[in-house]
Image (cartoon, rainbow, N blue to C red; front, side, top):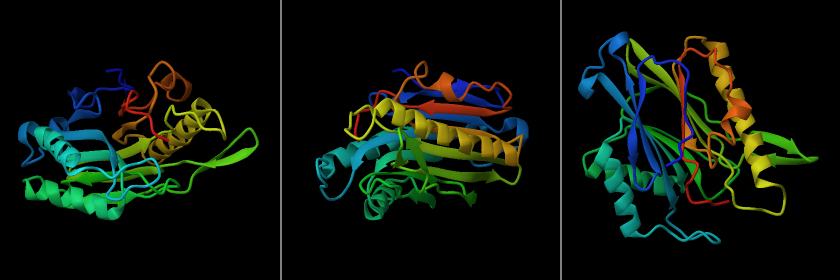
Length: 254
């Protein structure tokens, strides 16, 4: 699995592993140095990102509805690692999202706090699910860029929230799903992906401008590898605590 990740400073952040053919990735964020977490085993927060591949309840264009068997496998994979905070990509409508949350709750994993971000793409979205409350949420749904004289929207938007683990420990999370490697006639897919990544970098910079000591996790399906994308937009070594996790080899969808 070729992961897009970058560790700038330790601050308790470390990789854990992968599941489900590289589509699900887990980060452990330790809060031991900044106060105990209470009911979180081992004083760690388990943060995962998962491209759940067209988790939609009605077919749309070339996207089929997710079968009950495929949904059950998604539930099984999530339950296997029991994340405290989960970012999902290719999430369908709000009704499909509620079905996912309800199914996980029925099986013992409840996420009472959530954010479902509907961007320019009307079929699949990014979303956050959390056991911990959000101190603030900042969904980004209307970002655009110019490419060769044409204006394009960021297809899936970005989900952003500040997660309050306890009174002594918070962190910011940004979830993204960048343009796939599937060619389209309107523009070069790699150039579009890079422009979306530049906008994502602006969101990262804004977090540190607001709080230079912020703890930040950026994760999602970046649809590229670290050698192709990362050096072009995240070479700054000065940030005190941030980690990027991606799934560059996920199945390409427009």
